[in-house]
Image (cartoon, rainbow, N blue to C red; front, top):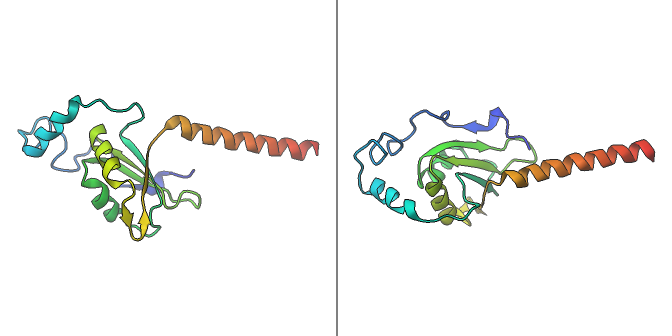
Length: 152
């Protein structure tokens, strides 16, 4: 999979991105409005173990712009980063990283199956073990092919 540096969109981690982020209105140091208080009220909800801050998005239109991605996913919370796939096998996919796990869950609940330019988005929580298993399976297939060439 090619999610190299060329596909990154947006500010680097640690930079202030939205007024609702840490330190802004509604954030930990910000005095907060209704939305900030609501966000802290849901902290006692127990989440499933597979829930995390990183969403893997498939079936994106190839021509979707960075601004459109930020408009779609930014509605559900402050974003740390969006990484689009730019290789032939990863086009139409991206990783969306939220600053808060509850924002990621909210986006997953609302955007799974969302229609963008005639395509329905498929959202999954990022699972590092599953991604590593794909890499391992590919390397094993390559090893088998090499052995076949060597001995056949």
